[in-house]
View 1 (cartoon, helix red, strand yellow):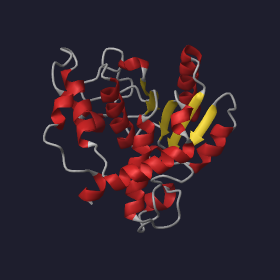
View 2: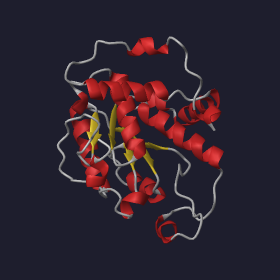
View 3: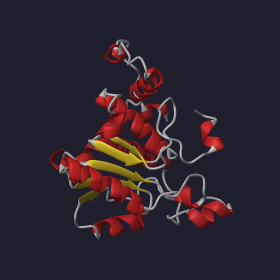
Length: 231
């Protein structure tokens, strides 16, 4: 419900997003700050996320790289499937440049948690639950073929996990993900707004599909007509 997701907006909260905007980044600035403005989790969500943050000790874990690896829909070819090794290549670049070998990973593929643990050059944190993995609901062949969880799920707990994961990803100092995932696109906007720096965005945001949209100038190496209609 709306009450679960966001609180009513304060009348003066727009002031923190006041102009001037960077002259060549108006679209990016607007979308990022609007996204952060809209994303105001309700107390129940904040409390739940705080418990997860405390259990993972993310405050003491900083600085760290946050990565989001979306898998289920990529196997259905709704977005380019990016190998895990490609994420690691970016993480290694960051670790080398900034001396930060700590990584928080969010994923809908439980198998990646075990895979990541084999790379002992990094210190890993992952959520101990399978966040927002697709349920096996209905008889659609897509769901039968590509889901990981074989059971139904509670919509409230599912939403809490989903929003909490976004909050935890925002705690990172760098973000590596794909904007063909709604989570990846949202977190990229949140991170850009948090940094308040759009001239050096490429130092903390890494899109594995290299096609960040909504006004950004990432090179579009992977054409996707359906996706670009929304740009």
